[in-house]
Image (cartoon, rainbow, N blue to C red; front, side, top):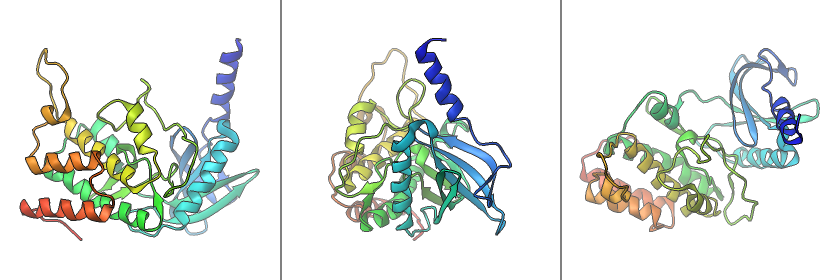
Length: 285
């Protein structure tokens, strides 16, 4: 076995999901492996003390100290956030030589799952409603002094009318200088949830300032719009403004998100409300 092959095998072995039925810290019984990103693993568990469902997130073993530091930062961030559209921090739980983050288990499907697995498409009003709903937890996050830095379709959870922002693994304080950790990628090397090349988008998304999350919202909206886009035969690729048939005020709004027209989520929210009111759009909250 070659050295590179051996190292990959060892990483895969280290990161093999925990078995169903195992009790973490003697309390949290693992029911289902939810998923694995670049630096963490998530499990749906039952808190045997209360009978309630929780989400347990552990650092990815093969990533060592980097993953542990990131999980500590995520836990510290979530502990300070209180909003109905952000999963509630429940605590930390030690097991052997590991410490996991425990949070509220949020039901629903991600926008990525809805589009990729269920073939869902979005009309402009529905996609704008998702953006409008997301602005509420994003505004709360910014007011608490943090930025998410990863507003993408895998990190937006939908359950009925409730839209939640999840996965705070890359969140940091506004202005904090952090190492640029690599996000979860798809098989072709591009992350899910963007309408153009990843490189420039990644650089802008990782800047620790509020406009980075608004920039992510712009790409999220475009991705929802592209879910139903069908290019004509033999047609060269064009810009999103040419390819998507958007209302003029919506086109201007998305351009504003991508070009950092609004320095805060509150100002962005006011502009979107103006657009939706012009459409006689009925919204909650």
